[in-house]
Amino acid sequence: MITTFPKDFLWGASSSAFQIEGAWDEDGKKMTVADYNSFKKSHIQADTKIASDFYHHFEEDIELMKELGMKTYRFSISWARIIPDGDGEINQKGIDFYNKVINKLVESNIVPFVTLYHFDLPLALVKKYNGWESRDTVHAYERFTRICFKEFGDRVKYWQPHNEQNLIVRVEERINIYDEKDSLKIDRMRAQMDYNMCLAHALAVNACHEIIKDSKIGPAVSSSVTYPLTCKPEDVHAARMNDNFKVYYMLDMHFYGEYPGYYLKYLRERNIMPYMEGGDSAILKSAKMDFIAVNYYRTNCAEALSADENHPFGTREGTVDFSMYGLFKMSMNPKLKASEYGAAIDPSGFRVALNEYWQRYRLPIIITENGLGAPDVLEDGEVHDKYRINYLRDHINACALAIEDGVKMLGYCPWSFVDLLSSAQGFRKRYGLVYINRTDNDELDLERIKKDSFYWYKKVIETNGELE
Ligand code: BG6
Image (tube, rainbow, N blue to C red; front, side, top):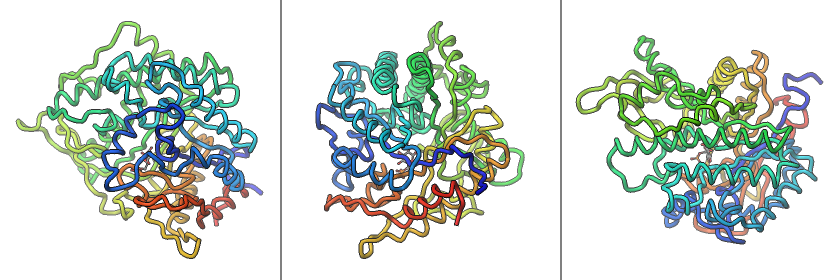
């Protein structure tokens, strides 16, 4: 059978530690920023304490991955399980847990694909150093990554340093900015943290290549494709700048080891240039990533937004989809339908995004997140999620078209394997191919139930991408 997808294409699925593991304080693990943020909402939705309880169900879950035929599993390691205080003692029980997970994956012929930091900085580093604002956290992170490469590198060859650095820095609570109200101070802190994370990324890339000879490592980017609201030239520029400020300033730093001009101009004019050291540039330039991992859910739309006396150039409004005075203002795309959670559904935009990353950097691409969040309903022990199958089919088809366009792709991992804790909507918004029988208020029996999308995706994998 001839398909567009390469023979060794890595069909998989994804997750992250704090969203599935539970056991938030078991076997020596300590609190993370993700735990802290989720506990603030414990009275209204599920939190990280139990989540999908992967910690106690990992064998059963990996059996299901095997049944699905997955070639790879993209998951994250919780830094605070391995080093509970971020930069202190090593916790052998944390290493043991991930060894069991990795061994079970390898025995099941599933390639482990590991993210080292998915929103869950050890909270101790916030208390000691204000998290990423300090170089101490950069050094702590490098040490953590080196430990992981040494402990797991004989079996894990694919790595991602940070999940969606370009999104983490937009959401204040993810970078532990809670009480500060002065927007200039917030932007200054954000710029420093962002820069320090770039440095940490480069150190991890270099350490990975040094310790694991046949390894591959690259960033996971929260994708942005922005359409101009009208064909006015100012709106076209605004749309480009939105993508630049949401994605490319950071990818350019990872790829070239320096920020692009428009971003430096913003840092200068906003007066928030981060502190850099003489030796940084050599580190940043020497780190050569092997692929780009793309997390794609939707596209955006923007129009021009001028600055004025009250809103000087570079000031922001909003968080994930922030607008920036002097450059761009976000709006809804009138031509696209949105999911019930407001995300514009746009498989064509996916093809555009994949071509764009390929043309800019000529690095192979793996999709590490793509999926539809919906309030699935369990009916007589079954979940009929036709809407998810439609979403996945259209997006996998977009990957096929991109491959035909010449884009080199390594694999595709929908978000998510099992239902998990969505940051804003707990267990009301589900993404999994496997249903977890629990609600926000009640853990029920945590039974794993295969959804219709599970059976559909199994066929996709079996046929290497033949779509029904
Ligand atoms: C991605 C994150 O940005 O979006 C995931 O990497 C997250 O951790 C996913 O779950 C979906 O977002 P949400 O808010 O619906 O959970």
